[in-house]
Each structure stands twice: as C-alpha cells, then as structure tokens.
Image (cartoon, rainbow, N blue to C red; front, side):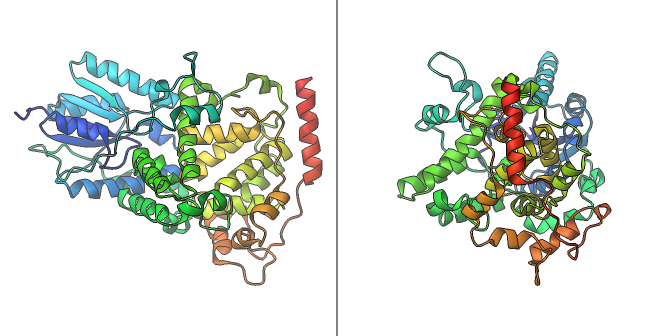
Length: 473
C-alpha cells in the first residue's frame, strides 16, 4: 500500500537518476518523492569554476526529472532549516541523501541526521559516490591503508553490485512546494567572460557522461596504458567532471572497465586502477580528514615553503607565464577547458612546490577555483602527493623536470603548440582562447613576448633538494 507521506530526496554530488541508491530507497518507501537541491553555505563556498559547472549540471538534472513526471525543487539557506521548512510544507515523513565524505559535509550531515531523527522523521544517508565505503576496506590489523598498491590489491577482486537502471517515472506529490529559479542564484557570476570560452568544453549531465563512457570503452581504453600520459592526445576517458558531480556512478564505470578487461582490452586494468586511485583518495580523506588543510605527514610542517601567493613567481605560475612551456601550457589548458591533463597536473604541482618552493595549499586553492572537475579528495591528495607531504611510498624527494617530461610525453610539441600562442606565426585557436578566458586585469595578449624562465630548472631543483635535506636535519 502506498504511503501517504512524501520522501524528500536531497541531491548533492549525485546528479543522476540511474544507479542512485538514495533515489531507489525513496521509491521503495512508496508515496511521492520530492527531489530538492539546497544552495547552502558549502555550495556558496565553492570556487568560481566548480560552482558554475554545478549549475549546468543542476539544469540538466531538472530536465531529466521532468521527463519522469517529477521536478527539482531549489532552495537556498542552511540545509537543516531548509529541510525542516520543506517537511512542514509537504508533510514529508523521510529525508534521504547520498553520502559525502569531506569533513565539512560530514559535520553538516551528522547534525542534519540527528536533528531530523529527533523530529521523528526517517533520515538516512546512502552509498553511491564510491565503489567501497572507506571504513569497509581494512588492513590485516584492522587499520586503514596508507599506501595505494596494497589498497588496490585489497579491493581489485571485491564484489561490486551491478549498476541499477534509472526509474521511468517518479511519483509526484499532489502539489509541489515553491522553488527558486536557478538563474536567480547566479552561480556562474564569478566566471565572468571565462564561461563563454569554457562552456563548449563541458560535457554536462548523465546522458553525456554515459555517452563519453561508451565511446571510451569502445575505443581509447585499449591503448590507455600507453596513451594516458600523452597530453597532446585524446587518450583518457575525460570522465572526471562527470564523476565529480555524480553525473555517472563509479559502479557504472567499474562494470564497463571490467567488461573491457574480459574482452582483452589491454589498457582496461590500468583504467580500473585509476578508478581505485579515486577510491584511495576518499579512503584517506575519511580516515585522515586533515589531508584537506594540513600536511598529511606532520614532519613536513617545518618545511620552508613560501606561503605568500602575491609573490611575482606565484602570480606568474597562476597566469601560465613561468617561461617553462609545459607548465604554462597546462595552466592555459585549465583556463580554456576547465580541466587539465593528469600528467600536466603533476608537472605544475611539482613546479610550484619544488622549483618555486611555494606551499601546496596555494595550488590546492587555485585549482579549487579554476577546475570544473574539482573533487575535494582527489585535489587534496594530488597536491600532497606532488608536494611530498602526502601518501607516497617513493623513498626520495621527487622533483619533476618539465623539460624532460615534455621531451618524453610530448616529443612533437603537440600539447605545447596547442596551448601557447606567443612566438607562433599561426597560433592554434585553443592557444588564442586563453587570452579571451583570463581576467582582463592581467593585461595579456598573444602579441606579448614569451617570458624567460622565472627560475632555472637546475637551480630550482637544487634549492628544493637543499631545503629538503636541511628540513630533515
């Protein structure tokens, strides 16, 4: 028998309808389901690019919900207050949502669950953002994993439930509560003119994500192991923006990768390892939440990083004007597309923290502002891994040389030519787009001379290694 009381389905980083455990649980209760998204302080605190990209995804989700006979209710305010108000308006008897794992979300969600339960409501979080809940993967001693390879070995053969299909219809209430207009939130305001440049590069929503996955597993996944490090080629899945907002589930990706593996596609296992690298980031985020704002290895607290982001060399790094082509190309790719090739991310992070001796928190915050595929766990772990302060079994101080990296992974300068305009007789359209995407206040144009290196690579490496040895001593 259908229950009379509706269920509020609180959407967050799970902006899809297929393989959505919280949605399925809401449907299983019977009665109407009222989807809602809350523009709370955590959403307000997002950087310019991820907030703008989130708005695009919300618009797509609203359209998909309408196709099922439902709609997305938008409200702004503190999450608990908004949910309580909606309960009063709709007579809802339950509130469900997908689990989050970053410290701020965990604090918010625990308070919401306790309060709603105290109000006599059924309130519950559900899995869906990860393959494996962080607390479900343990070492033999019952602790958590601190090194990736043993983590991979622990989960590689684990059973993963098959992804569920999207419901064809979602029962609607007799009357809908009022909703804000998405445009009134102006979530893309901070992007300014960059939105017009960055927009065409986005593949927004569940349908686009599923299409992207299908194209990848039928094509590039075969050579993924060899091509994933070549920034000048289209050798990756590019699903990071979709996974970050939950437009596609990791289970859907896992099953597609496993199918490709069983079909003998050589690069499939390497791609599955990358999915598990994302899991490892969340594993560490859950067990050591300090990874988001403090050195994961406390012995790095005394390392003499520069913390002043107004210094000229840091500004040059942000602008993609360091005089090191690989670094500059990567930063410019980010401003135009909202993303950056993973090999390039390692190079620019190493360069900032090693050659420029600047704190990883500066880079972490800048990426949080500029990446449309920003993810709290992957961004934090990636920066700490590159800086040396994070989880890394490598027993030496890694300093990437951008020139040798370019020679190895971009030997024909395809990537560099695509993103750097200065000094080129006929700059690539993408390279020129950089000057249209960046703030006018930077005062840069394609006719500017390309800058000389702000620090010699050999000099910067030697300085970083000397500082490392001094800090150890």
